[in-house]
Amino acid sequence: MGVFPETAIFKRFGDLSARNLLYLQAELFHLRAGLLHLEKANMRDEKDKAEKWARDWFQIHKSRQDGDDEGNQWEHFMKIREKLREYEKALLRAHKIASMEDPTNSDLGSLQTWLEEEKRPLWGQEASIWGTTTEPADRAPDLTALRTRQMEDPFTRLVMTTLVHPFFRLFGRRFRNPHPVLGDYVYADESMRNFARFIATFFASIMLIASINALWVIPTMAGRLGAISAFNILFSLSLLVFAKGKPIEVFSTTSAFTAVQVIFLATGVGKAK
Image 1 (cartoon, rainbow, N blue to C red):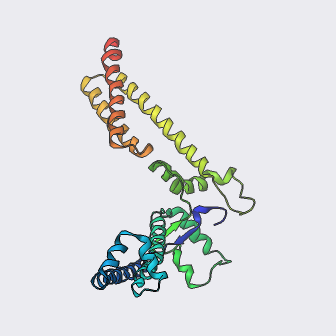
Image 2 (tube, rainbow, N blue to C red):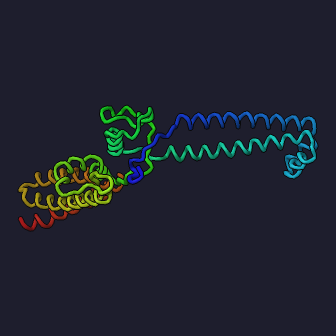
Image 3 (cartoon, rainbow, N blue to C red):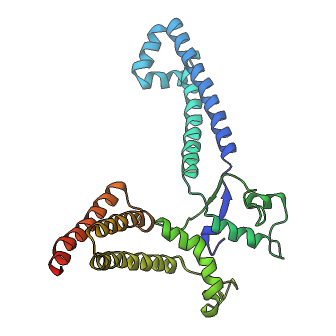
């Protein structure tokens, strides 16, 4: 976990956090009700003082120093201030923890495999938090990782979480040495991201070349229009896979791709024929 923060996976304890917030909220609610009750009582019994306190902080603060019974109102508010500070800190912590990303199945699987080694680093009941390799779904539902892998698009995610394992079994182990400290085979995230970018760039160039060649080879206009439609659909889907494009980006890029084919169809093929 220290070497690879992606496998530093912990339970959020969201239920306990919510319960703590509910208790603090209930305490504040009752403290607020008590403050309103004191304000009404002081307004009824000491109207002049109460009106001064409502307009001048120094007067209500001074009432406690003077030993007035009505000074309990300020002391009560001091309790509210302390409890409110605790509540707000807990609320912000809960929000920050809840916004942390879930671990990837690949990293969780690596941790499960490590926990099931012969040395068995954990023996207690807490080992069940992460599940097992035989029952990976039997785990705590609110797990989070200290750091998640940066996977900008679905294809990069596929490479980093799924394809890396068959690639290692088929090719990687032949020219890869184990990590000198961990004794296991390790692939850097940046290397896998670079590989994904290379494949995406190669595929993008092949798409345009293939479409132009297809338009040149297909003899009929109906066939060419069908090829343009097919390549456009494939191109727009590839944007979602390789680039995680927004709808407007997919639309504009596909339009530009279509324009290139149409121009070639109108000029290059037409003149050749």
